[in-house]
Image (cartoon, rainbow, N blue to C red; front, side, top):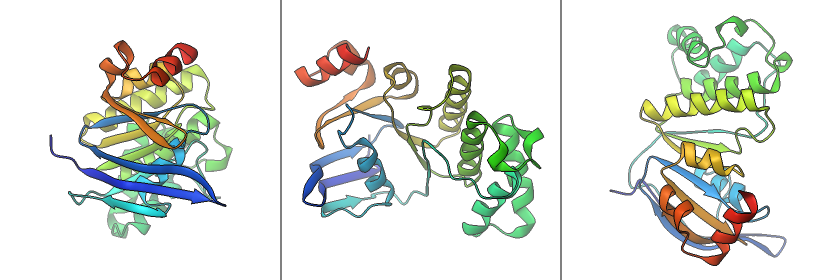
Amino acid sequence: MEPWLELDRLGLAENGVRIVEDISLKVSRNRTAILGPNGAGKSTLLRLMHGLLRPGTGRILWPLALTQAMVFQRPVMLRTTALANIEYGLDLRGVPATERHARALAALQRVGLPELARRQARRCSGGEQQRLALARAWALEPRVLFLDEPTASLDPASSREVERIVNEIAAAGTKIVLTTHNLGQARRLADEVIYLEEGRVLEQTPVDEFFRQPRTNAAARFIRDEG
């Protein structure tokens, strides 16, 4: 498969401490999970991929020109309605005013929240806010969606709903890259795993192979401890 994202000797340090170091990899699959213990550099790597952080060393290459969006563990909601939050994102992306309202309503419908269109976004529950954040991103029609621990603070029912939406976004043709601590979630949502420890990539493996026969002792220990 042709890679759509390449990292070439990527590195980043903060206050003299290496966060990620000498990462070179190619991403070609449609759904990738970034796994690793706390402090491994997962969120930093995701933000570097998305362009929110600038690498200190190395390069990020996009062989294909792909539009992007990102959803965080704790989404930021504007002090306005759920519908207006989505419309604002479309406005920033340059979508004409004549299209924004219909696209925002359609996005709310896809995530199962049409009844919340006029509710103040910050008054929605945590699970509803995360679904709203997914709707806001999906409305932009990104070719790549980055997700940073999308269900880490949610109850099981809300987590299942978020996973359903992510699967629908992927089925519609959007490539997914997510960080997660949930091994079951990685199995359900990913085609491959990028495994990090101490800011270095130790494995990049198809998801079934990673859980069946990890290539490194570190990954095997992580699966055992987290499983």
